[in-house]
Image (cartoon, rainbow, N blue to C red; front, side, top):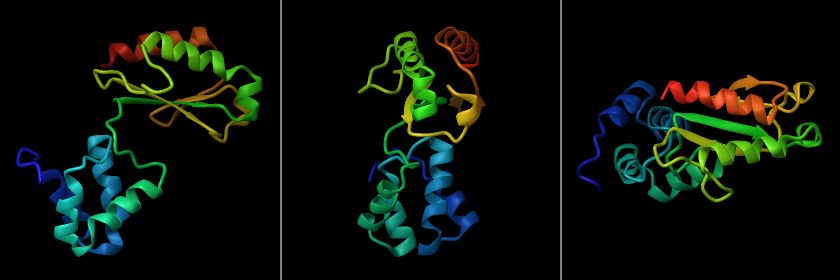
Length: 158
């Protein structure tokens, strides 16, 4: 276990939600909300505190797609590549995001942890295609140019 990791936040989340096995998903959500990912240090700590195996906690964290074991940026940008968005040219938007942020298919988060870019199958806003979200705020009818403008605005908030 990492001695430098401060478990104060984790303890607070567990105290708030209950330190019991049935609360593990809510606890993991709270931890991820704070850190923007699930630090590896929390798995043995949670196991000891809650009384369930690290393997069970890890399997829960890896089963649900919304949990991340890797740090994410302050701004998580999700670009829809479902049918409606794809036919309305979501790929050029994705390419512009990657170009402007120096990212690739394999590198999805900027080194400064400012931005993470992910593709998703559907955001449920097909009538507004092509769509991106930034931290769950929907941006409809996007173009590569609008995306670059949005990035400029977001960079000012870093």
